Amino acid sequence: MKYEWREGNEVQLLINGEEFFPRVFASIQAARKEVLLETFIIYEDKVGQQLQQVLIAAAKRGVHVEVTVDGYGTADLGAPYVAALTDAGVKLNTFDPRPKIMGLRTNLFRRLHRKIVVVDAEIAFVGGINFCADHLADFGPMAKQDYAVQVRGPIVTDVHRAALELLAVRRGERPEKQPLSPANHFRGNVRMRMALRDNDQYPDCIESEYMQAIRSANYRLVVANAYFFPGYRLLRELRNAARRGVKVTLVMQGMPDMPLVRLCTRLLYNYLLRDGVVIHEYCQRPLHGKVALVDHEWATVGSSNLDPLSLSLNLEANLIIRDHAFNQQLYNHLTDLGANKCKKVTLERVMRGYWWRAPIIFLTFHFLRHFPAIAGWFPAHSPRLKPLTVADAQGVVEEPTGSVHCNVEESR
Image 1: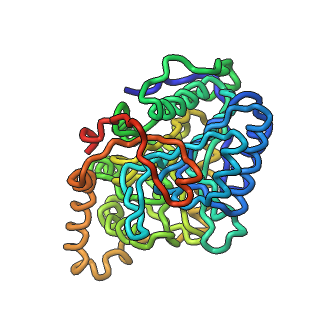
Image 2: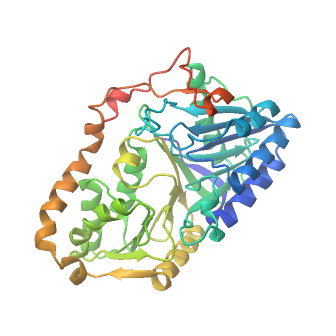
Image 3: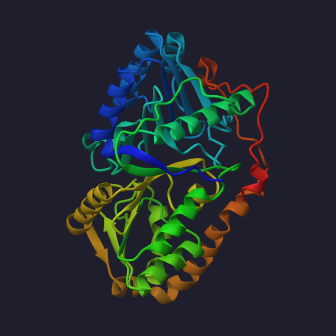
């Protein structure tokens, strides 16, 4: 099941927190009726504090505010922070909360990883940026490079619907109608489609969008992805595209926030380079983006990495965008990164010591390829949404009175 293509939209690329946070906060400050926000991480740093203040102000003037965070990614909010929000009338929800064992978080898999903000069902933001200061350049050398988009037009109807469907999990039902009448009038001439991944209705929509786009590529294909370890089918399509003359360029992490992830990604370099795929490692700061483009029209921006967690376990959200101007803007930006802020990976460099790395490559690839099924050996649970309370923030996780099954057993 897929969302339909929507005509007549407006889209703006937002690069890093410097462009993303001011737009989101200004939109919340202007909200009249409703704010729906989903994110993997909120930290109590300067970004989290500013988010808290604009949400409290919106709730106090009568705006219906729903904030949903992941039980793993946002596990450490303090009681005062939570109390300030809930006392103002903000409805806080946590996705799949789990108690810690010996101080360690236990809910490792099937995370709410998508990042969505919808204001008054008229303006929406979708991307990969969490609400924390490490998405700002002044954070220091480990500040993340990341992307989101601001959209208006009929596509907002679908982003709004996706947010409401997740909130319906809390009630154990699907929403029959939306509380607001989303603005569906045309705002531009951009064609867009919502692409979700979950363990129920949309198990492989994002991967399918990538596969179709790669197969259709004629001229150029650029992928900038933080955590890159896709399955064999997608890797094969990238090689096939390069073999038929498409200029395939990958922008990968060169200054990683998770070194093990970069090591796994590098195990794939030989397989891709020998058929003409160009690989750049971005070395100025950790790359956290999840964007791609094909030829002169197709592009995607969202939360989904190309790794087993995003493609097979997590809840993710991307927007598929068909627009020449947006495609060119993203291409110019990524080309500049590749030319001025990256190191080009050569086959000669990769082949050094390949004889002893080959068995590791083989074993690691096949382990990660089957990782979603391996994760399925662990006791199954039903992802759920429950109100986030002050007691939760103090470390007391209460079991909800009811939960909704999301077909996790079929999501391997």
